[in-house]
Image (cartoon, rainbow, N blue to C red; front, side, top):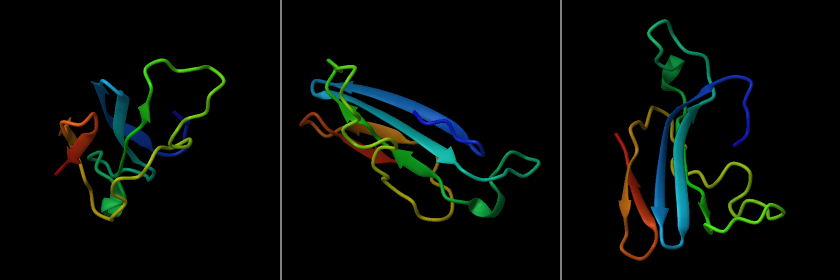
Amino acid sequence: MKKYRFGRILTIVLIISSLGFFLIYYFSPTHFSSNNLPLNNYIFSIIPYEKNIEIEIQAGLEWGDNGTPICTETNSQQYPKPCSDGMGGAIISWF
């Protein structure tokens, strides 16, 4: 996972399936108010990675350095709740 100078990762969820794994996290790339909530309800992203369990060192990430954004809308999407889709994938919801 990339290091970011400003912001922090708030939740990490790992789901292992028969096809690989999904690493789901949301990251706030903004400054925080005194109560640790993002200022202006800035963008939260939930980003999954799917990769074969037998990872080769020379191989690049299948989904790029930062995964695939699932939601980049403003206001906060928190507490990711993933579940299996029954076909080796995942369904992700949050509130």
